Length: 128
Image (cartoon, one colour):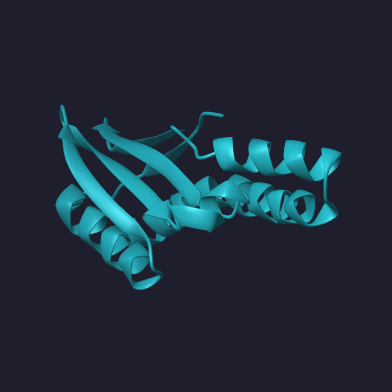
């Protein structure tokens, strides 16, 4: 599931400062965050609870935000969302037990809200 967000930037916009703010915010929330240069922008990978039982029951969160600056606009494309554990939990829960199914639904809701939250936090970090 890929989606994107376009954000206007001020004249004195500093991409690195915005990236640093967002990275710090999500690291404080317990996310593992990695940043890689991507042409004139960056790619930020957000992961939380990406191993063990939480991944198997669909509670792991993850998405990649590719941020590019073009004509005083930031374009944020979200890719590589973590859906595997959620699908597995829903399938197993549907067949065998209701608990993984419920946890899978919770994971799906949190996962679908993650790009919107990150996009809003990037927008607020831009400082317009």
